[in-house]
Image (cartoon, one colour):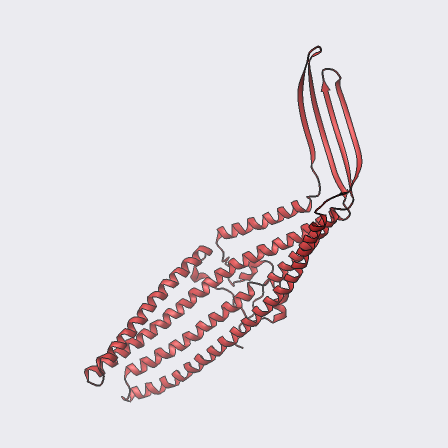
Amino acid sequence: MRLVKLVSLAYMSISFLCATDNISFLSSLKQEKLDIDRQKIELESKNLKYNWIKQITGSYSTSTIDGRYSGDTNSDTLSVMFDQPVFKSGGIYYAIQYAGANREFLRLNATSNEQNIIKSVISSWLDIKKYDLQINRQGYLIKNAKIDIIRKQEQYESGFLDSSFLDQAILTKTTFEKILIDMEALRYSQLMTFKSLSDSNYMDITPPTFAMIDQNTYINNSIVLKRQNAQSKRAEYLKKMTITNYFLTFSVYANYQDVANDINLDDTYNQMGLRVSVPLIDVNRGRTIEIQQLEHLKSKIEVQDIEVEESNLYRDSIKKIELLNKKIDIVTDDAKLYDSLLVSTKELFEAGEKTVHDVDTLYNSKQTMILDREIYKIDAQKVFLNLYAKMYGEI
């Protein structure tokens, strides 16, 4: 296979950009949004990890009792209350484990989103580059079309062709010119897409080049598969947390009250204790547990399903690369043939047996073959890009 230098992915998706000049491809606004997402994930994960720790609640109240005989009585109460589960038949442990699995899932999800944006930037750059090549190629087709018009005009004026052949040559040239305008419009639209994703100048960027990796490497580093594995772990711990909700719970509690009124002046109450509780009747218990068990089972099946999908995606990419390499071989051979014909035609032109139009036509055709080869190489890079953007970790 006509493969190029292997570029590896390192931690997070920024290294997916590993360009030689270390230019950050993403716009500052998009980088800022991604940074906020990462910070939010870490904060939410810490919240979830310590969510089992209850609040210490404080309250203050003041009241006035209007007594018929004793007159008004003012009362002020200050209280501090604490009620904390310390053992939930494994529920606290599973809650902490769930928080860890959830953090891993969210991190992978954020990484996937980030790499999709980076993929869009590189894909947009490749599309612009492809349009540049196609526009250049179209220019050579137009040159040949103009030469064909000159030839047919000469033949028409000499009486060797009727006007329909000349008319067709003119229409072909016009069609090529309209296609060129459409290509320029598409290139401009793609450039605007690039500018919406990146602050960098298109001309200043050199994206990494990608090469084929083996299937095991791809599957083992598939971010989609890693994310689904994290989701499966999350479902497993959520199932176990749900089950422990119906077991024994041990809690410690404390209550401090300071009451001041006009009668007793001041009185303080301190209360501490241990509470044991267990749900006795819950009509939805069986169904609630079964729902979480089914969710866990579904998540494990989805891991296998995604592995099949990713394997098929890899094989499809391999096939696309094989077909593109065949096209590259064809145009490479054609370019060599045109090169040989060009050499002999130049010799005949110098001998006066061929015209300059013959030389120019062959040269223009040879250039279209060379540009076709570069276009197919970009198509191959887009196939590689789709694979690399879905991988996570060092390869």
